[in-house]
Image (cartoon, rainbow, N blue to C red):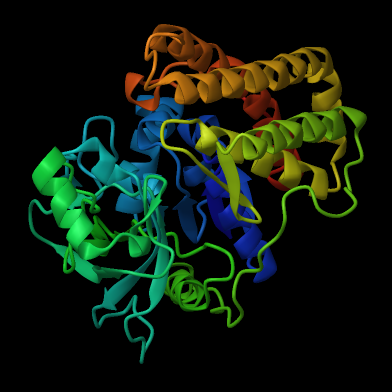
Length: 416
């Protein structure tokens, strides 16, 4: 059995669990409070997989007891797979698991964090690399960077060159001539390049006590990424002893198809969120980058909106359990209120951002940044760097969706 840590995973948790289900691999969603209360000791899985998301928020959910429980599990012979934020959680950083002695590289310029799209990887021979793999394309979605520190860490894959469709923030890098990039750096001091360079580590592995870990900044679970999916299947086979899948993880389209969970409140929530997306697209603020992922102008909360859409879509595709039906009924009144306020708030916020964008050159203070910041706080709570879990109206909706999905696919109870 593969346990998938569900807290603060959102879109990235949906990607991973959909891939595992498509490949017929046994998986269960688990919550941080379960790990803190000894689940890994009572029902040790073949593998604990931690999807992407913000490592600091995952650590806050786990708390000291949960973090120590994961360390004990791996130390005693368990296997840990961390993807992007899950990889960051495995590092030796404040609040981290310290499975790997390496740390996180700080960004010299914050723009360098906003790298996304396909990148060539340079495989290194070893147990976690399929035979015959040659510079495959694999997606990265806003990765951090490893800072090597200490011994005993093996590089499974290094970064190569950015591939087709690679973007820095909302700028397609392949559409900017090399000379323009040099000019921008000389004129404005802006280095429009990712924090990683060819040869920097992207996927690493090592041992912790009697156990093993693999930490990947590449999202090998991204749908319709054949080489990346093959590589993930090989890693799963090595860590968990499951059959390696041979087919790519299938893509899907947000909001498409008849829902299995035809609850009117979930339908209303999807209607409102898709309406917000249509508004954003009409004003040039949002676009569909993939059928399951939004693209957005730099600075807008597209990642949060993508997370809500993915969670709503996934919940509606499930046949609900009795426990999830009861939980939704208990939360119905609060969720309905949050959904309506979130839809209205997001629409107003996007229109304010559109106005600010139009007036930026003639009157930069016409739409004060303070007001936009307050709107973002109301909608999404404090930024990830401030600690704690996702908040605001968005956090209220996501919390119910997390519980409902887990009560169906994890067969566990939400935290008290």
